[in-house]
Image (tube, rainbow, N blue to C red; front, top):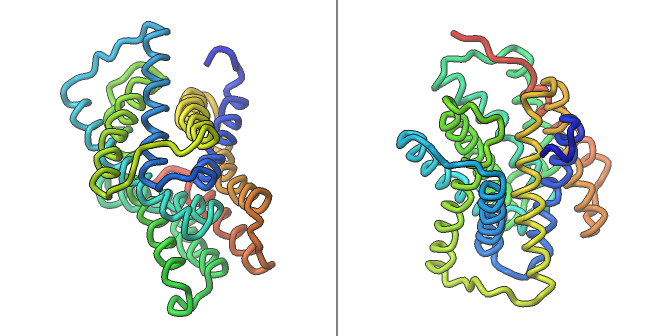
Length: 293
């Protein structure tokens, strides 16, 4: 990551690269499980090559390996839910829903770490739900079945992604390396194994239909899973919480833009207002540290 010495620039380039994740999924003509498999398989292989090229050794404790195994399971579930949400509600809304992980992290902090949320963070929860209501409508029964399923899958993706982040944080608790390349590589390859088995169990083929699809999947694995993750991870300790919060917002905001530009998503003024409110709520929910009880 020394090729981009400015940590702020690394942070925002990483956020931009990850914002394309749902675009690659939407463009490929493979099943949601298969696209998830190739994201982590290609990304994990690229990270493994990075580790070999830079001379980094694995050298992880048995405790860390066990936690990373749990993290791989959670990340595989996250991608399984996220990719289906993309198919049902579109890249923009699916990415927005997955960023509700901020609120699941807040709940986990309260229940597991005895960290009491600040008033502003508590206010962000109903604000986010109100913004989501403006986007999808407040009458749940009026929504098409697939659309409702997409919303549920998006929220489940947020839940499992929060679990992935918590286990990754725990696995790195004693690590002195600011770049979690080893951990992300192992989790990626472990998730690839699980998603590959899931695809077989679902009767889905892992064959790539065309060279075009191969290009989209390669872009997904290299740019989003490998470069995006490393650029963000290498910058977080060197930027302010405000800058990190803005980068957090950049991903779903840009994903909505790509949804409109590339896939012709139509949005009413009310839906745009709802998206803006939800994004503000995500930002507020990510701001400030919770108080220890």
